Image 1 (cartoon, rainbow, N blue to C red):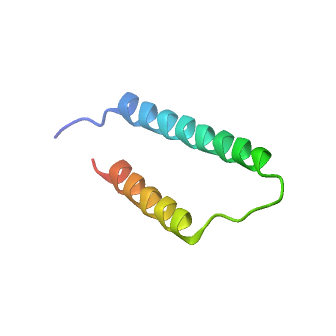
Image 2: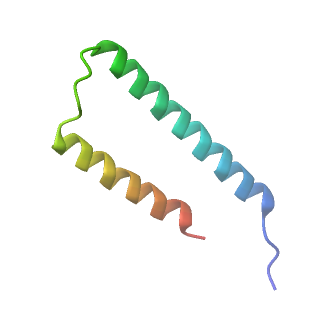
Image 3: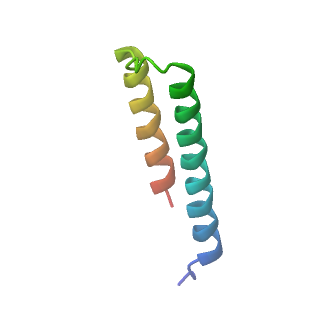
Length: 62
């Protein structure tokens, strides 16, 4: 039986946290550039949702 590679799993979690933090910083910077509170267009929100789903599927693969 194969042993679980805990270091690999930990590194993947760390990379995911880093990616999410970068996305959050990017969103904050964009919000700062558009202080009127403009909402994302439906096209942009749909695109972001598709990207999030693809990323989630990638992280679930063993």
